[in-house]
Structure formats: C-alpha cells, structure tokens
Image (cartoon, rainbow over all chains, first blue to last red; front, top):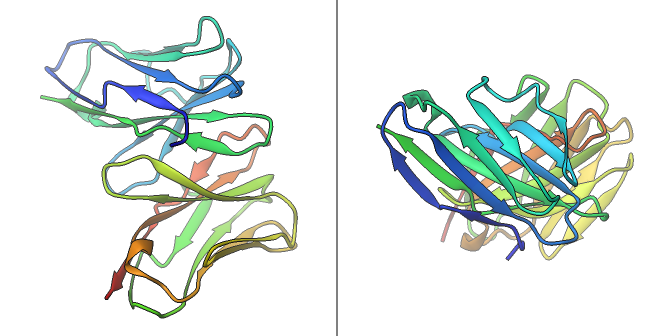
Length: 112
Length: 111
C-alpha cells in the first residue's frame, strides 16, 4: 500500500461528457504528479504540484485537461468534452522528502 | 519516451535463472527510478538511484546507475514466478522529478 488512493478506479463515459478523477496522497507528499498511460506504453507525464502550486502544466494534452490541488492535499484531474482518444489509465503519484515517488492504483477511463 | 530506451521489450526466462534489464538515457539523469507493474494495476516502487555508480539491492533485485548517470540496469537473481510483470524505468532529466518512462520490459518466468 503506497498510501496514494485514486477514485474512481474505473469510469465509463460517453463521448462529449466531462469526467473528474480524484487523488488522495498521504500528508507527507508535498509533491503530487499526474500521468497518463495507454496500453503497451509507459506512463506519460501530464502535470505536477508542489503543495497547492501547479508548477508544470505545459504537458497537459489539450486545454480540455485541467488539474487542481486547492488545499495542497487531494488533487483532481478533469477532462472536459471527452474523446475516444482519452481512453487510458490516469495515474497519480505522491512524493515526500525522501524523493521516492509512489503511485496510486490508477483510474481507468473508457470513452464510448 | 524518445529520451529513454529500455531493453529488452520482453523476456521469458526459466525459474531460477538470472536476468538483466537495461535502461539508457540520451541525457544525464538527475535520478532513475525502477518500478514493477502488473497488468491493469498501478506502479510498485522498487528503487531510486541518484548518484553516479550507485547500486541498491532489495531481496533478489539489484539496480545500478553508471558513473555517467546515463545508463541503469536492473538485475534479478534466481528469478521466481512472483517476479513476473512489467518493469519500467523512469528518468528524471529536469531535476523536478517529473519522470519520463521507457516502454517497459515484460517479464515472464516459467515455473
């Protein structure tokens, strides 16, 4: 157990709908990262936070993607107007002062 | 990721055999992370290497980072079926820990 929990674990939605994923790291994780993983590929970095500050977001896939970490604890990743190409596993990772990056179990999105 | 190459892409070994997985970066690394992933699940942290020449071991798994900090290897001794899965290396090439991952090595261990 990495202490990083994600929900929902699975989400099936119709094209055009909005979806939101939530990540709850442990309190020691001052940095929080979002990744996307498609079948047969390694995770692809999307964005990260240092406490509540979003320090890198240029790699978010389009302006339909946005992330927040309002109080420096949990984070949300929202995808608006979903497309079939958004189908993937969305992974969250937390990092504390030791530098080790711990991932959650992921949220699998299927867009019909 | 084009910055990171992982080899081999897949590996099938007999139980009890040793094996090595390699990860090569075109850039000097601030850090190199090794993870294991089972299909459809999250990534399990194995080891983090940050210093040139560093070597770490956990149970039967040893990871090394070369002196130039551009290449890492993961070695499993006396493999077991429980070692089966996808091994991923993640490279920190910016110093911000936003890792770039290889495509992974799928390991199958035949009992």
